[in-house]
Image (cartoon, rainbow, N blue to C red; front, side):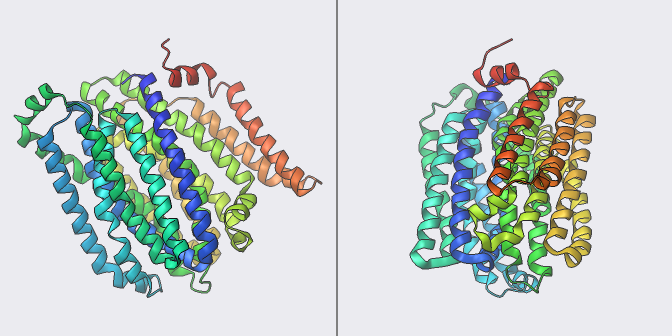
Length: 488
């Protein structure tokens, strides 16, 4: 895939991701204020617990389909088997959650979580189908159609969750809306997929080797599922630790969930770029084109860093204002954890590109082992830091393993795929560190009012962007070529 096509793909998927971010934060805004810190924390813990299984059913088989379709085209028999395997896997994971919901309630010191997990688990079945149809479009490089399907789902999900909660169904209503809405997205996706004319020549050619294809399918899916579970365990351990270890405050999980949700903006912003780069890396790997592979990886990791550091700096500079605006003054204790988590999650965003590259290049086991190592380190840090420092301790643990994971994942990608990382990334992180010190330690000392202080911080963020361009870490020409499709 050409650099220009990656850019266009990332752009249209970024629009869809923008709709997701807007609707997701409207949901957080409404639920945080209506439910209050205690119930909002319970909602976040249940959803993040379910996300481990949810990401497993939406990544392993669906991403394998994206890789397969990108390399081989459409094949109806293969896709039918994929849907069947995906649904059975989701059903097995749901049954597992149903069984372990009782001991999980004990670990979280909250008996109500049992019923919530059992209700929320239905989303595993519905979202597994939706994920397959969207990744089928991704593999076909039908990014426009994929974005329309995803945007439709995001809007429907928002309407159902908010509708149920405003209707008086509280946490149960939010979980039901989350579980039912993927059905409508799946229906829309199927209608769009069927409108695409299949490549009959490729379908006939591939079907004659169906057994080998299915064998490769299962061989590739299992490692990706293992990686997805490991990565999401690493991403959610801090919130679970807060719920399980901080028993003196029933609202602690709510504060931390608020910080975590706002801090995830850099991670959300990069997912569209990662989704567009994944098929490109897979195609380059299948052709043995090292130059194209290196170019695609460098493109993804560079612009993920650009997006991440700009968004993260904005969150750090205006963390107090963001918390108060979105959740209200009751969530003020979330401010410092938010500042720390925004750094951690920008590192996870860049790390995600490296892990995507390893998966797309047939190295999912390496990515899984790395996440497993980080989980062990994270658990040790959480058990030490959370009892000592509470919410701040959980955030510090997350930023520590995120920085470690970033460096290790990039090094592994370079060694395994013989690729180069753009020098500008180092420049961006150095500038990022300097501006963090500026907006958190120096600017607050100025003898100005609250409004003037906010304006000065916004001006610093704008100046940071200008410095990125002035230092040639970011190029206007490169961005123009990337998104407008002009060739050099």
